Length: 310
Image (cartoon, rainbow, N blue to C red; front, top):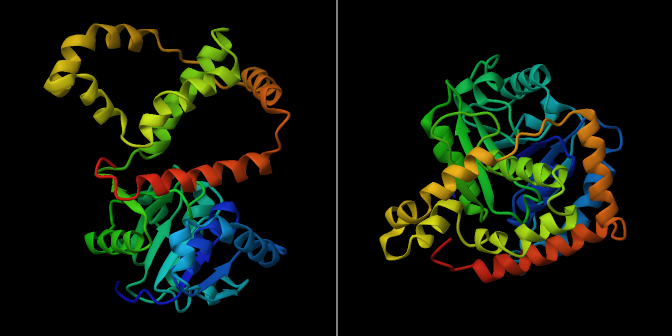
């Protein structure tokens, strides 16, 4: 891998801390910055908490980079070869932050944002060197989940996207390239579609929150760990693939698509859903669920390693 120099983490919340853990585990030196007064202590605690949850093969590699915290943004970015930004999801604040990062980093450094929805075109709009700003959107927790969504804006250069893809691939990530910008990127839109229908089913009294979750985790979710919805439906078509699927299931899909719900997340709906979900899972603490999730993620990743389907 080309020398990206120290990696700078801007914003050290849950996502930033998880990225930090991953970078350190691959022997990269990290300079982290955050405006919160307690950020350094929280970051170091989070890295130590995440470290034992890294995949075994990563921990066994034995390399661990150094971590330095620098509260001043410009100083933190001064020697960076790659910047991973994870700050607040507010458009004007993001534009100004990326402008400052661009002004402080050396020429040629890639600036990658973890933004869940803000477009790169907007984020790079105030930069003197907008060509190096890219989207590098991870999935939580980034130190475990391989997916990272890559996209450029109107002024992003191909070299920056190529460099970011090489960087993430070297870290064991699985980058996908968006050929055009769209709000929420790819995976969040797919998640939103499932979430919306789950809320519709809950509101319609079809099933409990717990059973709706089980309908995914004990059914199609198992297949989705191995293949996406398009390949899944290709297999559903038998030897004829997608052509066979449409022959058998197009009328059913048409009826289903017409019948899918469109709930609006107003305050009343939020309150009802919150009550239903919390009632189902009140006996399990969030930290305990996260610990179980991460342990099972490691197991799934171990099973998937070398899987030609994925």
